[in-house]
Length: 417
Length: 137
Image (cartoon, rainbow over all chains, first blue to last red; front, side, top):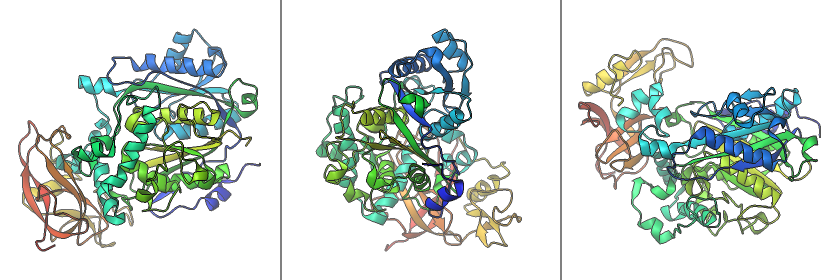
């Protein structure tokens, strides 16, 4: 299929008021994910983030059937401290070749948009085998009092001037406020919202790498727990973890000859609210910028929600997962509370059975807080057919990344594009 | 700790007004609307802004009861909210809520802006705008 023009993508991907879609050029068919790797995900471990990153990279390279010297591109986060550099890579692996380097990688929205950057780098001949890696040690940092996920928000000028002094901080407070508004507009109940943490916990209970693998959670347990930031309980909030995850992206024509089933990168979308970075001022408090990102990714991939078998959404909070499931197009806005009942997010209930398996590794709520990097690794395993909670005949997957004021969408498939 | 900054060029007038128990926001006369968060000029027409005192009539867009200890800056539980002033309902100002616990609150209820003292851990007290629902709603 020939590449679509920006004009035709924009036409196919119309978005509601209140934000915009970035004009990402069509990259479908260029690249595939050919290897994945990760470290253990844990609570406070004292592990060095660079060491974790290098271990995840080594595992991903081995999984792809490559040697370290085959890697000529490296993508890391430019937004989270202590990521690896090309020098770290060369020192660890004893390599010396040229290494295309980008800080537009990592997790959150970049776990989606890195695939676009990587495909462009391949198309222009800057790199062939590109590894994206993300490492975090926030569990260790929080235990040591040396940093929290709220630091960026506390340091942003207008938030520091007008939000922090009044107590609208940290993130659970933001998303609890939005969840309360959602409950008002759409009659969502706390028992309905519980389906998200409960389903993700059941997935974690079946996933050997999940932090909460041994911890069951019932509806009675959930409802008996006190609110942390009403209406959200601790079980509605992501874990704080140490760990790293990585994946190798390769040109599609080479991927066909590599040992793993190639996972095609079919579409990428990236959206932003008009009031960014101020989510308190976004036009619709009950939706996410996924409404601006997802249509572009579907248009690029030439697909639609009805053709997606498994999803992984950035579940920093249960309510943000609920909104993104709607904003990705799996049910109408406001219907999410009833849609997520009856095991519709559970891995055994396939699309054919009216479900949409979601966060089958346990997500940020119950697998670990790798900010979405583990979500992409999980989707690759689903499409390969090697996941712990394997969705029957999973052919196409969507990752929904999120920073609050921005969102990004990545469409993957195991069919020939 | 982020205390109110009375000397900040964009935020100082807001906090100075709050310390006098007044609510003021930057206003674009040409567009007849508030510009929030404050900017040097109106983002719609690039025109000059002036600080306008508002009536304090407002509606509660949403709120959150925060457990003590969740926010590292405050020891006690409290309720904070997004509040839209009557004169410019397109903006949302972060405020406290005078009612805590917040069991009788509901979204879109009308009320007025009062001012209450708040204090961060290790800091001096300062005035904060606080939404008070009208009785009978």
